[in-house]
Amino acid sequence: TLSDRLTSVLKNLRGKGKLSDADIDATAREIRIALLEADVALPVVRSFISGVKERAKGAEVSQALNPAQQVIKIVNEELVNILGGETRRLEYAKNPPTVILLAGLQGSGKTTLAGKLARWFAQQGHTPMLVACDLQRPNAVTQLQVVGERASVPVYAPEPGNGVGDPVDVARRSIEEARRAQHDIVLVDTAGRLGVDEEMMKQAADIRDAVTPDETLFVVDAMIGQDAVSTAEAFRDGVGFSGVVLTKLDGDARGGAALSVREVTGQPILFASNGEKVEDFDVFHPDRMASRILGMGDMLTLIEQAEQAFDQEQAEQAAAKLGQGQLTLEDFLEQMLAVRRMGPLQNLLGMLPGAGQMKDQLANFDETHLDRVQAIIRGMTPAERDDPKIINASRRQRIANGSGVKISDINDLVNRFFEARKMMQQMAGQFGGFGGGGGTR
Ligand code: GDP
Ligand code: MG
Image 1 (tube, helix red, strand yellow):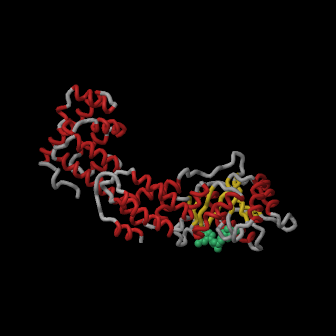
Image 2 (tube, rainbow, N blue to C red; image 1 turned 90 degrees about the vertical axis):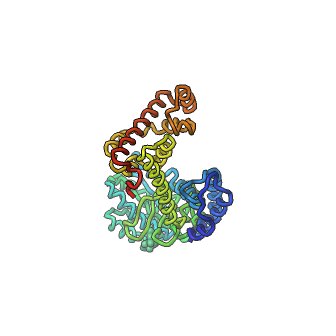
Image 3 (cartoon, rainbow, N blue to C red; image 1 turned 45 degrees about the vertical axis):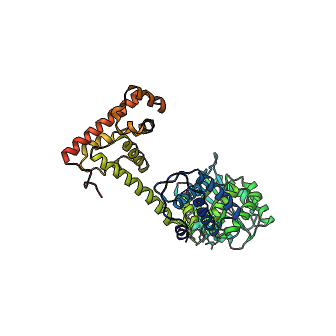
């Protein structure tokens, strides 16, 4: 697997400074293979990797992660960004019905999706109607009727002697029917061919012109892999679409098609289909897809855990010092940064046994001032951080100038710090010190 390969390429280094070019290149090479194995189209892989390298080159080495993990983290973030960038909700018509046209190759899963969408809308209180515009195959209408029944949604289909055979006509009349029967959403199922051809594109475009859809969804089978790019381009040029639905994600496809289609057409992926049953359907989750494309959910979990463990470690060290009443402003800053990475202050407090009364005080600490506090401490010299007593009026002025804060902010911070330290010392005396051995782990 990719994780194994990466582990063998890179040692478990922790360092300072920038990520090295060698680290980045070695990792990028493996990521490239992973993307190709996931069937991401080659040009898309190239541009993606170069973007990632660019970003990785500017990155400081993390203390929590080894370089490989760090590059993977960047890769994952970029993937999630691209897959979910500009994620948006469906566009509903101001005057109902909202018309949604489904387009895609035969077998991509349009008819199945029509049923899933119908059910999904109905569950949200909408009154959808399905329209059978695939009149190419003899049983296509029946298939949609079965799907509609399962979703408990009515199907508009041509009746004998009533314009059978002309999908454009059916599409046009379906909108009138929807208005009449007060359906607020119309889902138009269309025909597809196994390959892209002009006649099919023209029919889809004619249906589009007849119903002027609010959304045209390009339905694409995740299993088609590399072909996703050319198919998407053909539908973009032939019909145009405003969103993508990825189907058959229950299969073993790694989902590279998602990245390819997103990159090449710029249109967002709105839904994911993952099974034949009407409930096998979800809105699209970029993070899940990114981890699937990379094929290393375990590695990503590990990275997350490593970062959390590191934060925890730092916070515990600070908590121990705090417990012994030896807190300096340097510790305070470090601890604050660790805590902010970790989330709410309560997490740290949980590590301080017996600090009940202090918990209340710290819990009232206004976290919106943390940026200012950070700026102030960063503006201090190491000596000042170590022993804030030496911070006299002229030093205060200097710090205020450097950090862009008011002198009163500095006074505030220093006073609060002294109070906290005094309280810690008192408590340390009272409890015989809970810094050593009193921890929760
Ligand atoms: P259409 O030609 O685009 O209308 O495609 P269909 O909706 O008829 O689907 C083609 C085949 O793929 C059918 O056998 C469906 O049951 C199957 N199918 C559709 N979506 C999915 C899916 O998400 N997962 C799986 N496993 N099969 C699907
Ligand atoms: Mg169909």
